[in-house]
Length: 514
Image (cartoon, rainbow, N blue to C red; front, side, top):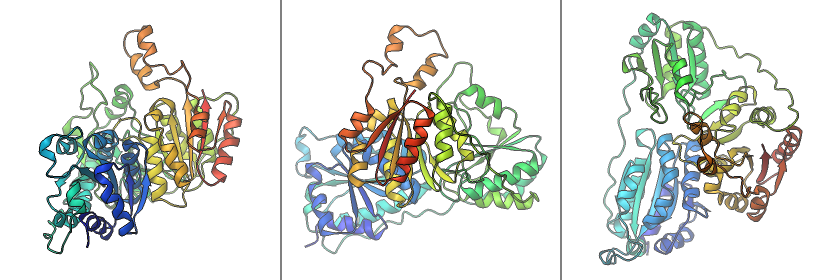
């Protein structure tokens, strides 16, 4: 007999799902049993649901295909929503499997009963409740296809326990056609004409896969257009994925705060959205309009997920842009003395292995590293797209599983990493080649910066942004989770520890004292 759970897992595998990040409970145990009956899917245990959803985000960004998550009822799914919010902003394909009570038990409102659909819809582009064991295979197929729609999105399947164990049979309904007609290409001739007539042009490049504005091809084409038009180009503030270093153009990220961002954007007569969304301020700031560029100055050139690199290359040809010639990257000198964000960033950028993946979270080193990394070896950078903290470490986990053979570096801040510190156990359990760098300044640095924009903070405000009493001992935490660790205080110590960590198999944590 083929159970509903077995049928669903088999359908996921046929559609290309190879990994499931799981934190199951009682209502998912028949799916757990089905993993043995339907071999072929790698199961990765996360000790908290936000670890699972963040890992699925990192996996999907690197593979362009969804991983599955397996989560326990509404409360378990709710624990993972923060990183599903980030994944939605990154346009990452993910398939969420959520167990529910036996269908006949739901009317009795048992303690763990909840409205799962209401939780799922804000972070899912597609939600389906399995209605029978015979519906399970179709639900699996449709979920994968739906996850790949609209440039990538979450697809959530709610799976009552009795339908997991029931006989699937052979009479399941045919799958719905969830494929989308590709969006029409922009009128490139009209775009070229507007660019030629504009006084000042700025390209805002969106992140994503190899065909995005921040893939290698897109950046080279953008550099050619900048040379032809006297234009400038920036990456969006928090790209889901960007290729960096190795002689690629040095395009910085659009600044976070409105004043420096507006200083860049206000100069442009035309802002080209090359796979990026219209720029808005991160929060509402008095005296600053939320929309940083008026609609009349925007020139859309493909939504997220569109083949923007093709469009940029075509425009470069139409405008007779010169060929791209990579300049020799500047060599970063060895740093000396006490650690600062700049010294950390320059040291990591100088020693970064070829083809590494860098998951960046935190304001302490995030911007300094992105600026320094233009002189690094070629690598892929992943940033926090949605602002819900606790993303950096799980994304590194998922990226490492998606990209075997590539060294992963998680460059993180101490406050945000505490949200998903349980990821360390999964890194050790899977023996993944991830170097975790914790910038330990013992505070919520971004909140301190935001406070500094207003009145002088008092002692209560200072206390609510401090992690100093007691200080978190990251080396003891890492050791407890099975990850070798060390603590460094100078640039010389960091260089030695980072080089050694990149040379050994498995995960390593380095606490960087600021």
